[in-house]
Image (tube, rainbow, N blue to C red; front, side):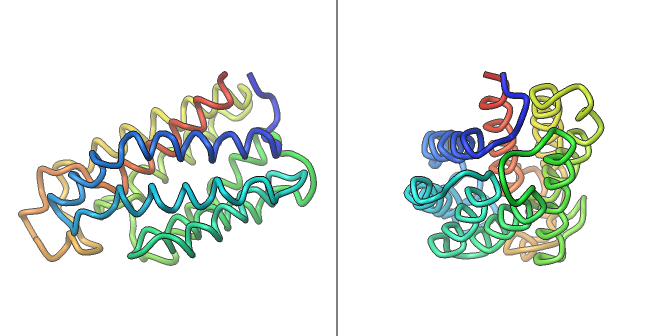
Length: 209
């Protein structure tokens, strides 16, 4: 289990996200097809594959690893997902120490900065049926349990993200393409929230061993 979020852990996080996204790409696309244009899984699969390709060019800091990840996502992913996920990782990265790794408390604060960046870019709030519904409770849960150590905080964040994603099912979308459907968007799991929960689950998988 990891006690510090360092460059090695950051690289492994991105690699595991890429694997899990690839495994779930069809499912994420089906979720998106119900209330969007159906390309969410494919776009993220391409984006995280591009991010993995950048990892060997990074050096000794988690900050650099996640900055490169965010840049790759912005460049490789079409639609809204690229800028939103790219912003999440780049804002998160800039809040980490410039050199070396981060403590659980520092990573918790950085996760919140990443969420704030997504909210500022997309204009979404909790309850709008977006990735924010998973990211906000995840960041809060991580910060609340950071004193228990990185593995425990990551597990708490993953569980909160999953619950947040599940809670989008009955909601009516108020942002993005799904909002055009009105009441027809109700009864569907938001694909962005689902992929955000996957991202946090990958973090728990990596730091928890």
